[in-house]
Amino acid sequence: MEEEVLNKMNQLKFIVEYTFQVDILVKTQKRNYVDARMVFSKIMHNEGYGSTIIAKFLKKNHATIIHYFNSINSILKFDKLLMDRYLYAKDMYLNKKETPLYEKNDNELSNKETKQQAKIIALNNEIDKLILEKYNLTAIASRNKRLSEIIEFIDKQTPHGQERYVMSKINTMFNGLKFYG
Image (tube, rainbow, N blue to C red; front, top):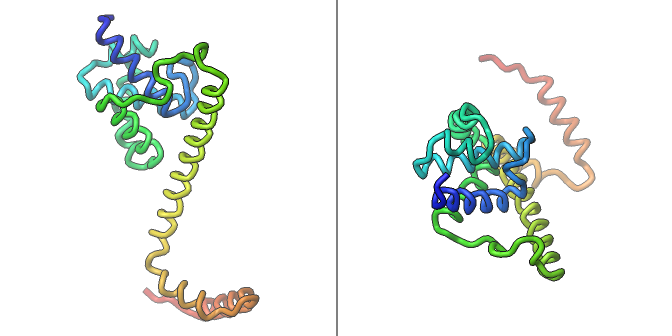
């Protein structure tokens, strides 16, 4: 493999591994690892590299890389967290931004830097959880949009401690309703 291509792929590998906190060359089918490899493949493919060279770098069959190409766009439509990670890695790679401690390997890190790196990883994991929670809350809010006025009215009119009583009244009311349609 040409040195320039290898350097580009290694740079993107580091960024994707930093973003997903995985080693993309590890042989596993765990979702996070597969997602990281798909993001790597998509970015390299968008840079003009074919499935064969990407497969050689990732130590995969070229058919696996083609499967990644065919799958990732539909997955990105529904997986907000993956989309955020993809956009982050793509931005870091295309704009040549440095990830923290990019130039040092684990053996060169001081104890203080290692602790800071661990804090960064923990904070990134917390950010990922918060992004997923935000996505879930947005989905719930979207589903309940048409009922928001009713929910707001019930919230204002229900005295504290009387929630069960109001719920039983609402249940009785709905049991008596007949929907024709």
